Image (tube, rainbow, N blue to C red; front, side, top):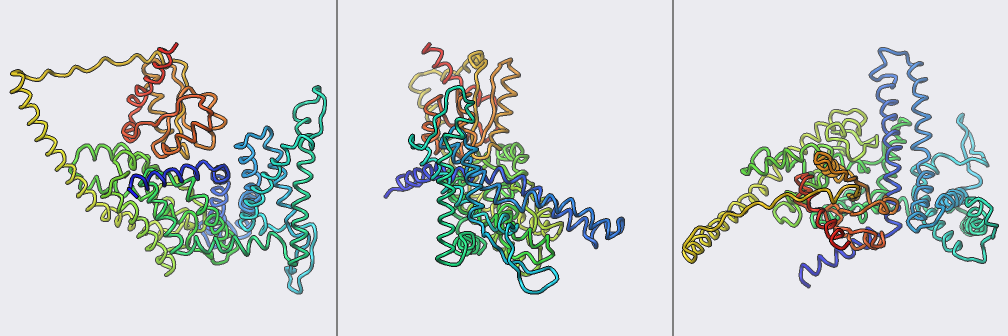
Length: 578
């Protein structure tokens, strides 16, 4: 099998996985949940670093005042971290129903929430705080079932209940018909009545059957048989390294891993993060070294592949002024771990010399960070930090204010510079050799043409600039997985268009917003990281408008002018057709 054929098969499989409705729904739901986790992480740090009775403010405030102030953070934790599973079961069901174009997605979302509670134990055993034998309690759902402990139950419940509900809803026989005078929301509610009843009833029967046959609960079985093994797999160093290596390999081949690896890797790592946060909040030792922010804090400084180290290496030793200028252009987004311009513009993509450190260097970081944490040289990660927080600050926040973690990040960055340098120098050496060969060949061609024609070659005249008026009142949507890197590009394009007096509307979205935004678009530009999804995007929007790749060169240089002008061909075609 040829390498091109193999890559084609990988691309096809990746496109199918990335466009699979359930994986997309998982990804979009976790993205929405991130701000709540960030808020929880901030208040865990606030409560147990700043308001600790032996902490920073202990000299200014009494212990009683500090403990009283911590009540604010405790309430925020109850409204964020402790109801994570409830958020996810609603979000996942809503996203699945929306992507399957159910007219009122809030109804299956509420069905999923009801099914989630149906699977909860009716009676729990609880030991009194004062000690003694455990007593049976009814009408109580502990936070341990609605926080990280219920994440996988939420995922499974949302997927199964929503699909059952939508399947039953298709039956015309199970719909109650009302007159046309009745408000649409009331009609939808009554039409879904039997679907709601049957779906929730089915979950109740399953919960009852499991309890009778095994003496256990569905929630406990999922935690034991699914959640615990997956958390162990991803928080185990070999398993984690395997998945992150595959992530970097896919990205170096131009396939964004967020819709492929992340739905497998992130849920159990998020559970592990929640367990660390809960343990830290209760004064216990956090159980996990590898959690979700571990990947971003140590291996993704500058983005996937740790490309901030590559940019620093360019500043240190690059022989190309163009490379140094490129680094100055992309260093700002790189500090916030946005590195698609580096991957697709430098490029790392399909560049064998740079693919090696891009894939291997983060794994070296993970190994060093893992053992540094295991040996107690740095703190475990106890606060959720989003991937876009700059290095050093992320290490301080994630560790609960331990500057040793910041120092570790600095050391890992230095290692990265030395790891990238020899490959960068070899790459530039190959470019110099290639340029010399092309120069010699070009000189030879010009001399031959002079001899044959007896005169100098004509000098090319630059073509006149295109008229932008055809773009007035048009809407162009830039799309990528998260909408971060393309939002920068959209701003550059929008500023150029406005500067030319053009009323072009340009904005960026993530893949999850495609269904609601595409009707507004006259043209959709795909970021280089999701070009492989062009076919599925075109089908998703039912060929509403052209879907074309955003030129990787313009994208890497954040060249808004060239990107805008490159779209003229599509609108001029429409004008000529008219």
